[in-house]
Image 1 (cartoon, rainbow, N blue to C red):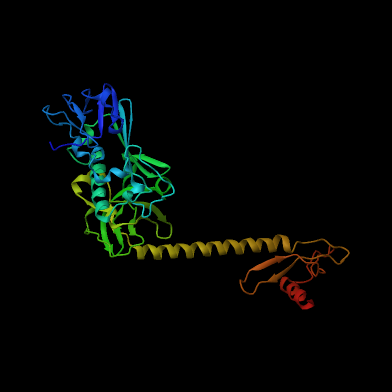
Image 2 (cartoon, helix red, strand yellow):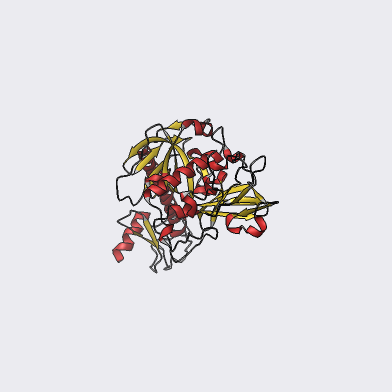
Length: 379
C-alpha cells in the first residue's frame, strides 16, 4: 500500500480531524478508523497523520479515497466534519466549476488554513480541474457500486455528500442519474451528474441516444475555444451540469461551462443501469414537424370553439325574441363585423330596434341580414 497522508484519525470512540489534533491529549493514542487490526497513526508535522513507524501500513483501502488525502489537489473544495464516531466529507461541486468565485461571500474552509475564496489560491487551472473532476468521477462511480472492487463499501462511519449550490446538499444516490431517469419535477434547473450514451457530437453539443423516450443534449456555454470532447458515438459518458427542459423540443439539456465536465466511462461500469432501457435516435426534425402539426390542430380546434361560442351568443343573447305588442322603440344589441379577424364582436350600444315580434301573428318582420344592413345604413 502506498503512503497515505490521512486527514482523519480515531481517538477512543471519537473521530477527529487533523486540525483538532492536540499532542498532549492524542499522542500515541490515535489509530486509523478503518484498518483491521488497528493501525496507530501520529502527527507527521506536515499537515496530516501518518502510520506509526515500524508498525506496518494501511490495509483498509482508504488511500484510494482522495477526499481524505492531505495532498489531493481538490482539497480546497472539500470540507470534512467530524462528530463523535462519525464523519462527513462534503465535496463542493458548485465551487469547483464556478468561473468567477464570489469574493464578497468569503467562504472559508475551517479545516484548511490555506483555503479562502478571497484568495487566488482558491482558483484552479484547466489541468487541475481536469484532474480533480477525473478523481470525483472515479469516486461517484465507485460509490454507486458500478465496479466490483469498491473501497467505499469498506469505509464505514464516513458519509459523503455533494454540495450543488449553497442551499442543496445531496448524497450519492441523489446526485448521479441515468439519462432515462430524468424527471421534470425533481431535476429541472438542478445540477446533477448524468450518465448517457453518445449518439452524435456537433461542435459544442453532444446528443445522447433517447433512453426510454427521454431525450438529452449536453451543451457547452460561453466556449472561448474549440471544446475537446474526447468521446465517440456509442460510448457512455458521465457529465456534470445544470439540467433544463425544452417543451418545444421535448428534450432535456445539460448545460456545462467547461469541456472537462464530460468524462468517458466504461460500458461495463454502468451497463446494469441501462439493462431495461431502450435506446433510439432522437429525430429532432421529425419531432419539430409533429409539434407544428399538433399546434396547428390545436389552433383550429380553438378557432372552431370560439366561433361556436360567438354563434351561441349571437343566437341566444344578441337577438332575443321580444314580445312587443305595442311595437314600441326598444334599445337593441347590435353586432359590428370585425373585418380583420372575421369574428363578430359583441358591442352594446343604444339604437332603436328593428327586430320585434307581433304578438298577434308571432312573425318576425325583418330577416337577420336585413337588420344588420339597416343598422349600418343608419350609421
